[in-house]
Length: 348
Image (cartoon, rainbow, N blue to C red; front, side, top):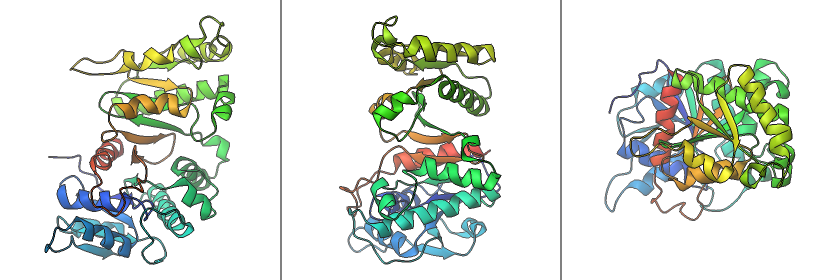
């Protein structure tokens, strides 16, 4: 399979070493060498060697893992060899499937390094393997996940306040794309985040990002917050007072946005399946689970998380650390491969 050729390599962060991140990376390099050509791992050598050993059958040699000194050396690695740039302090092998401060610190170190390298232009894009939010917190990291950490690094690099670096999460597969107004907050806080300014900002970011990706303005469907999109105010007035005015303002600015529509049907209207394109290219959802459940229901192995609004390309698998699978060697690399393919397309 041919892929867009990039002049710079792609960095894959190893994720939480207690989870399946290192294993799906090793599996990708072992089984899909063409897909990962020009990629390297920002991580820990010992952790990746442990993961590579899990890929070997009885009596088989382990997948080679090579230490590199710079991103450019990734292109010199032979097929079915994992090039690793040591981007965190070696802390020994952390136990599989356990939350720990050490694992959280290692995962965060790799993300920070890859973000800074991508912002500097040393690498074309970054693909992040899953980390564990409780492990991040145990390590004293002040951000609940990748998105918020990357937003802070980008704002610092650009010399702007955090508020001037708005970001949104998009989850996408071959059938459906959805962008979220709010991300990792409580449901109560997510409802409070549905404000005219945040909805309009989400529509603007979605329009700008998808226009670059699709090569044309996207058709945006907007989900309501309440059942039946409020049923004319019977079940809540957010649609009337907030969401509809934001959609109208977006349309006045040349954005092809429509809604708000009932949340229980808008995703089906946007879905592309059976060779038929959906009514919309993307759905803007009002909160995390509203938007992510339909995409993940269509297949955890195909979804890709893309951070919109950053001055860098970042994609990720749509699954978590899967502590119950860690150390078994059975984790599926399909979503990671989809994230790598998406990163190549966005970084062209």
